[in-house]
Length: 250
Image (tube, rainbow, N blue to C red; front, side):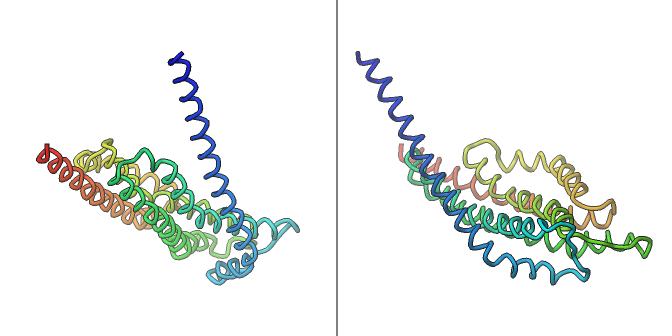
């Protein structure tokens, strides 16, 4: 009878956790929708901001292109705004199972995730506008008539920019993996040459086949990995200090 009661309690706990998770995801979805609506209201102003950085006219080939670009811009803005909310909801869901010290550490990751995502977007956009796009335009050299459409331009720009936003999360990922004991600063230093090679390949995929552009992109990515090692070292030292304090108390 007691085993049956325990099974019932476990099932009820699982259902309660799933219900809480669903509630938090719904709150995140509601925030995303609200952010999307607000972004859509200002989509035209946001579009003009991007348009001011180029010296050619963007064209449309279908009546649906206008709504597509406004929806795309609104979606991107809403995703950026929702990231910290999603992280907070996930942290709140996991909070009961965390230690007091872990709660503070993981909570501090939320602004870092958002900040690095935005910095990645800014850096990627700067690289696109200042290096990648001018290089591609220079290849034409009057050979072809240029006709740039809104949808193809923004699709290409997003494919070039968004990977930077993801890659810029490496320091936070390194800190998190260090805190749960999967990696250490020593292992990251050992993997440095392999990580550099991977980042070089990633940078090559994100840029045109020009060695100067690829190096210009790779160098900041290498620096980002070194920052990740420093961040991992910071977390690792805190873990060692807490472990020593615990051993001294016992």
